[in-house]
Length: 259
Image 1 (cartoon, rainbow, N blue to C red):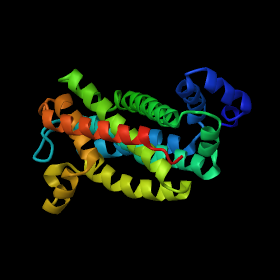
Image 2 (tube, one colour; image 1 turned 60 degrees about the horizontal axis):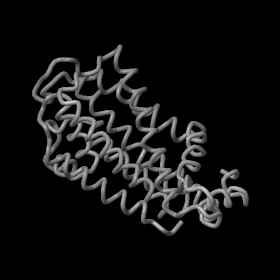
Image 3 (cartoon, rainbow, N blue to C red; image 1 turned 180 degrees about the horizontal axis):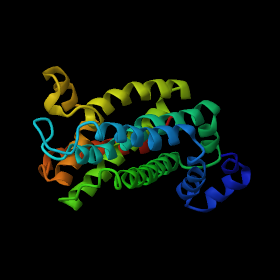
């Protein structure tokens, strides 16, 4: 990132309106070098999906209205989304803030909103790549369930991804250090992961756990995607709720001024 804070770059930013594009290119180059990215966005969802999806067989039962393996393949795309927004981005951005990189970017003339937009784009790219890898691994082992309503699935995936990456940008700019971001991110991530799609199905949860799961944002994203994907319902209300959350989180992330 040192190349983007030189005097020459600052002058280029003032003359050229593509600050967000410059930041995006730089961040994409660094994306694969982050151990947290490889662990929580790629490795963890894939390994956990392989274990969980193979634990319940392939026949529908009282806990699963469809093939359990397909249930988890559809659900684990949202596990990738949660990992990106709650762990990867907050730690990445907080480490920049801790080292003073964000202040140098602001001092170099980058518009304060350009960093947020660049990081949102980076998060969306990370989710897209990790989701493709996850489905590629799942395909020869469990198969990929047919998309019963592709447009609604894609809409839910985009809205859910936008919400979580914007939330990740907010957390990264608020939390004081990478350690704090990691602690808070993991604290938020694991309950969301276990109750919001990656753990037991809602039918086998206790009433207390089911009540908690219902209000988790990751649960909303999972339901908005899994329902139309597996033919379990259109989930129109859930999709609208996720879209509203995405709009609010994106607005707040872009408006965030305390870099």
